[in-house]
Amino acid sequence: MLVFLTRISKEQQKLPAADPQATAFAGSIYFINNNFYRPIKVEELATLANLSYRSYTDQFKRSTGKTVTQYLCEIRIAYAKRIMLETGDIMYAAFESGFGDLAHFYRVFKKTTGSTPKRFIAGEKLPLGKAEPV
Image 1 (spheres, rainbow, N blue to C red):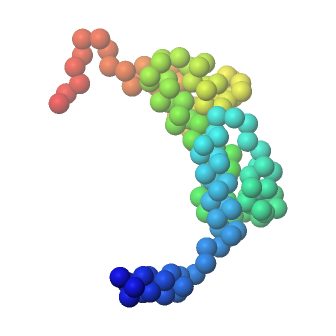
Image 2 (image 1 turned 90 degrees about the vertical axis):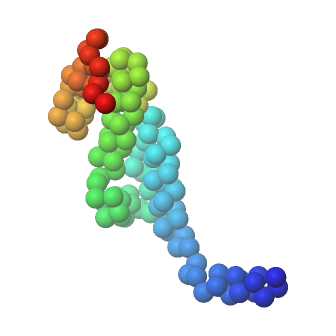
């Protein structure tokens, strides 16, 4: 047992220490994913990641391939789609997913999905009496 613990200890010493900046950046992504429903400012995320605004936005784009706004909108739209399918309520979905303005929600939804929220709901629900093929 002592040999086993000694070997594990030596292996852990060989591993590079976690990069504090990478950990802080990952924490900011975690923050977005768990707080998307509220207003989030890039400055707030940069502070969480211990980076300047410019450094944060550059690193975010390199890491995700998207801007912070694009990433946030995609998460919000995905959540709104789920709510709309569950409730059929577009306004509720818009506000619950973090959009403060219904018109803005419609614009972002259309740009992201290529469809309006109303068409999305209609297209995803089967007409009464129609069974989905097995």
